[in-house]
Amino acid sequence: MKNFADLTEREVLAVAISGEEEDSRIYMSFAEDLMSRYPDSARIFERMAEEEKNHRHLLLEMYEQQFGPNLPPIRRNNVRGFLRRRPIWLTKNLSLDTIRKEAETMEFEAERFYTKAAEQTRDIGVRKLLGDLAEIEKGHESFAARLTGNLSPDVREAEDKTRKRMFVLQYVQPGLAGLMDGSVSTLAPLFAAAFATHNNWQTFLVGLAASIGAGISMGFAEALSDDGSMTGRGSPWLRGTICGLMTTLGGLGHTMPYLVPDSWLNAFWIATTIAGGVVFLELWAIAYIRTRYMDTPFLQAVFQIVLGGAIVLAVGILIGAA
Image 1 (cartoon, rainbow, N blue to C red):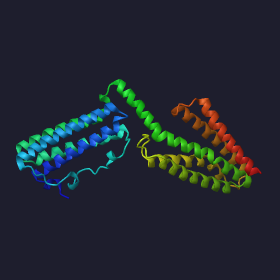
Image 2: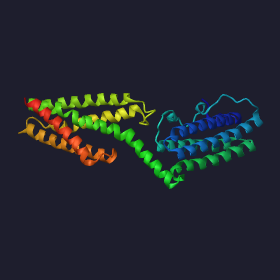
Image 3: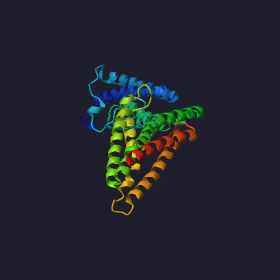
């Protein structure tokens, strides 16, 4: 790796040319990713990609005038001081905010590069070009920060609806599926163990095992269900993690009350009463989330979730008391 201060003018221009080419491709990748969800924002990135191509053309013309047609094989990752960016453009269905922040970072880095390059360049023509590009990139940085503000109200409203839909698909849906499974499926083994043993610690261990096991199972099931490329549901591993964690939390909610020490007077009934109250809150919370994000009528959600949970709970109690 070379230090930035050790670069020759030829190498500075070569790095700038390769950087503009790479940024243009990244912006086109962003545009392709956004086109089906945010077409107006996608067209903005297409214009930014074209501007980067124009910058590359100007730099290439200057390079050929100064040094001829052959470019040295040096790129930004061969120079110390550049930000090491994760290749997020390889990930599909990125959120608009994530892309906007990445564009801000790219333009900030480009502006800083051109400013420093202009300072250490001796050729007047090269220095002027680099200084002009620094000002242009600085404008792009501000433009990227105001990206959503450059859209008309109707377009912004449509993109907000799309953003909400993507949020539901990528976060709410897997989280809700996990919470429902964890809150409902662990009821039967937990309360069966509780009424079979009347021992809080043993019941807690059963609930803990059921919650963690269900979380692992649901997490893998969600992650392997689809890769998100066609459904727009985002990273499978992110969805799997969300689903697994919410499943575990759903089960642990009514498991934790059984940490009440068995040495307490009426410890079993204290723990079971608290656990029953937690179950009630969990089921109503699930019904609310389904109404809020999944457009399910509230009474229908209550009937489906509360009734289903009550049946599972009753089955667990009957088996444990048998």
